[in-house]
Image (cartoon, rainbow, N blue to C red; front, side, top):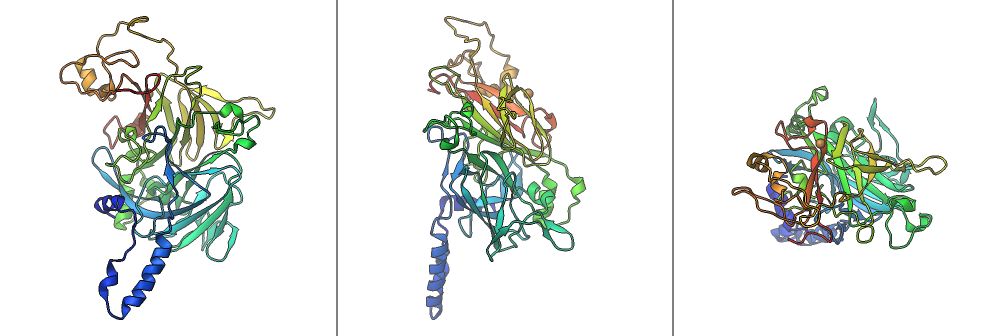
Length: 461
Ligand SMILES: [Cu+2]
């Protein structure tokens, strides 16, 4: 599918192929019946409602809430900040033929205890599947009823779980028994298919009634009141890496030696820096809907007491040391399990650089505290405007407000463009494996995003 056709699909969400019904004559009735079946299949909405925070829809996790999901393994292209476009596979929300491609897979959000059903249709030329990492008792229905999902064998192992052959479907079902952040990904030829982009995140939220001491209307990450967070400050950062030569070979149907795998692009939730800082559903990134900008306001005991929740998932092959500049996060869970000792001891810990291993997830609470409280009137700090070179060439310089004070904007030298809206402050948040902090040898880029701290009460330009 070309970028152009994706853009057209973006603006025509209902895709019923009715144009051919004009071929006329005797076949009219047959075509009408086919059209009726097509309508029944595809006009009934198969796409789960997608939603980000109502308060900050431009950033933060974009959830597809529900218990039944329709996914379609399909192909498309993504854009890289250096102008390259890459052929990818992923799990898009199934909207029938012409489904709009997206990478990574749609984020699925369910509640603890839900029976979750996931339909997988397959537009790709080879069998594909979904492994739900961390879920127990996953069943699969290939057309003859649900049975426990099993590894598939021919002469040798062909898939770690049941597959949807090309043009066919498989349905998976499981009970989401433990809250947490999880990965779903292909279990079929994963060295190739996971690399091609068949990855996504599954979020299991606790039921408030299962949280001891939990208060209705409050939001918790786990079955523990200490994991309360601000639901308007919830972020998902999903790491992946891409070898464009493998993708090109798959696109052209050419052989590829997997032992020659070499990554040149790194993505967070499907985008490479600086696109990671763009809003959710940025129109210039039609197949990469998820932004990765982390936006906060300073902690305040009364006005802003709750931390943000940052969910990190790494379905890729490499391990990524990832850190926010000048800040720590508090790691509260790993692989969907709260960090608590056998006696209920709090084993959460503060960390500057937390490496996420291949296949791991972790959850971090994050607060930004305005420790020094610099203020031009009451607590001034003498800061000279950085030199022109730093303001023009440094990676985050164009976000500088011209003032060191949160919520203030100052004069900038002639010729310096600033994206700063209201005196907000920016901190890099990136992989400290600096080979990953680039787009095909051009730094900075790749596995990086930005932490944005807005003035108390929000950004008023
Ligand atoms: Cu750094």
